[in-house]
Length: 585
Figure 1: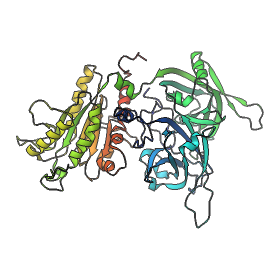
Figure 2: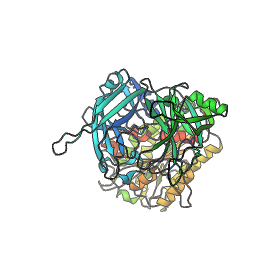
Figure 3: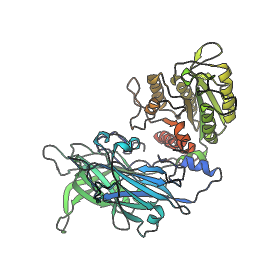
Figure 4: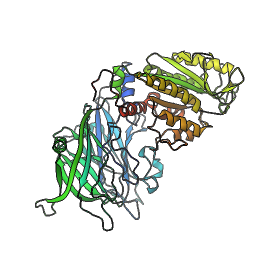
């Protein structure tokens, strides 16, 4: 299941939408704007039960302005929630569609509809610069893109429309005092379906028509669902297979949220990819999920048709769509595993290198203020500790320091924070705080800054647990000022650990340049590669700068738990591990 439509295709050729169920949103949840299982569970355990429905928004635009000289704009939409103080909180982004002034985005944006709250949504549309076409949208800096227009509405305005669709006029800065028509943005809202059913489908085609003059077509499939208004809403696109009239695509995973029901008509269109954005239709067919399943079972093929331009009969083509494999699966959620008895176990490592500054001076990140005010590390331990303590079943944390000169005069890169020769565990946040304070009195800050030793130590614990088939997943929390000496060694250790039930959460303190930490967090879409050329099995690193939390950009709960459910699920799904007591799939 983990292979569904993943890949590193570039230049607009990558698959969109047909992936396994998104385990968590990448957006802020301070206002319950988007749902994350881990965050929601945390708040609900404290008696906070927001009344909301999960809504998926599908966006499309018409008649956008053209900012490019030799081609059309490459639009991407960004949605914000206007907070009470007037500030905008980003909720989600669509994908980038190349060379189109009338885009229909496939990537949905999820928002929680709160009945008792006026939720003002703000949409910005950008033309993404050609330089950034191979950059994941999550990491795009919006100031580097051309602004195409803005639209605003209240979520309840969409939800109360009969077809739950609203079309908004885009507005923006007037040029030389002249009002320009910036086009329109349409928003369709659909309530999410609480279903774990996933259809995993392997498509291929044979005998496709050739649309290219000097080579063969570069085909891809686009799948759309027919909604009540009889409109076709795109839900999935395969990757592009270059120069091939008999293409075989990677598996497509469709959730019930995407296809509605097994009898809902789906429009399956095959296009020849063109870098200009004017993809040429090769053929189309209309099949429900139930019909696709029947095609697979009976080993039959569906002929594509080409729509008649004169409203006559459609032309039946020799090109055919074949379903090589159809598997209906149950896809369990993060909470399914946790509630069944899977345990999360946290480990903590604290940076004792000299780059933090002399602890005796007030400018040091390790300075102990006589007035009792917490230093940067103490703040991080307290704020982070509340969250990780909630998810750790026994609240006993192996705790280490690294980069410090211990009482024996030797610099250690993984010493027991409690100072004990044997036994590295402390109990609760209070235990971490006490061990940290004790270590500051007995350990001299030194260096260099090596993460690889504590990563290997955590990996050994996770490996032992794996060999015993224990239902446990481990999270190593590293609190650091971000100045890393052994980048290559750290990457090697992380790549080795990517096969294990382990995630590494790096919390950055202070105002250092955290570019090295951001490189370890594979949010750029590229998994880490070791010095021997081995690629990480999965992304296991998340980086959280405390300055973003203290500036109010994101809540500490959201920041820490943003990627953990996804990393956890990528591990258990890749190994076909089910929740405890669940029937085998």
